Length: 248
Image 1 (spheres, rainbow, N blue to C red):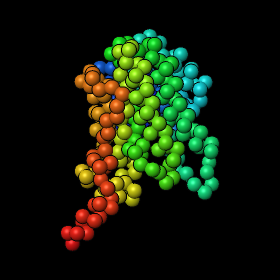
Image 2 (image 1 turned 135 degrees about the horizontal axis):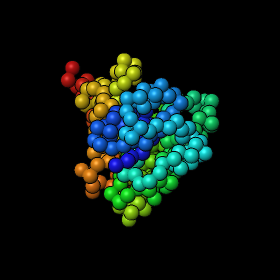
Image 3 (image 1 turned 90 degrees about the vertical axis):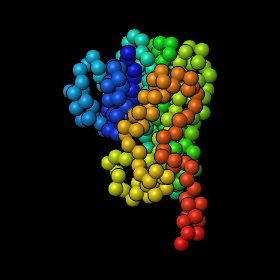
């Protein structure tokens, strides 16, 4: 069983997804961004080439995407897209090049890969695209990121309509605030207070949900979004403040 993982060597939940798939018996054909070359080298040294093959790909480049697709030979059991590009914008001095790059990586790349790899996917294959709870919120400094995540959710519905007749499922997984290198950052501390579970999610928790959507355990789940955010989207900060203030 072979599966394509986009962003397979990206530290965080992407790497956890790769490891989860390997532990479940899959062989992973993965990509990584130049930023994660060192981690890719470590992972490739840890696993044999029969289990893990990693290729550096600039997801904003159509030529590099095409080259990667041509390198994927034979049948595959699906794809998990776990890469993203985030850029904090300055609304007063908008960078249109960064907007274009965001759309290229977060929206165009997954759409391209789905269409170019679908003929190699066997019936019963599954596609999972990791997105973000930012898709459900208006943004202040990440309009491109948020817009692409919302667009992916709609695209998933359309792709499900067309891929279903091939026996291929596709779903999106919006992740909430996930722990990692920035756990102590004030933004992350604030997110803890707004998440009903009172903590950040873990990489392994996102990997577990991604695997559920990828596996036969979710065989009738198709064209939808499954949110993993600890209840974050259901929490209204003003309502929370009002309630807490009434109890003083």
